[in-house]
Length: 100
Image 1: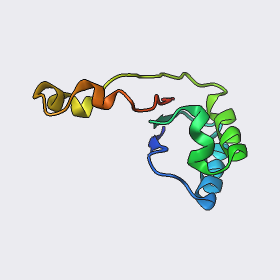
Image 2: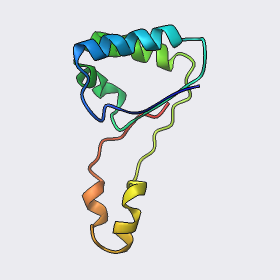
Image 3: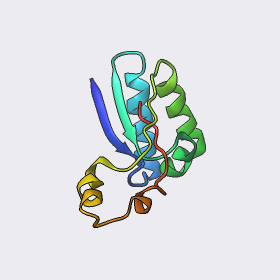
């Protein structure tokens, strides 16, 4: 099982994008993978700095995938919301993510 958490949290340079593509390509149809991201799939071209590489990665990831799109407030912020340290609206503007 390969688990990769928070794809897109930080941008990935061209070398990193190429290496990530190679990892996904070699892993494709050989074993289970779980990926999480706070970015929508349409934003992955920006994450990897190349829409073509992002499309190739997504093509392999989504071929046999089950995707879950989780919307709502961050689980990590729930205590601050309860304590009224932040307003619920402060966190609603985050981009929807794709979770595979």
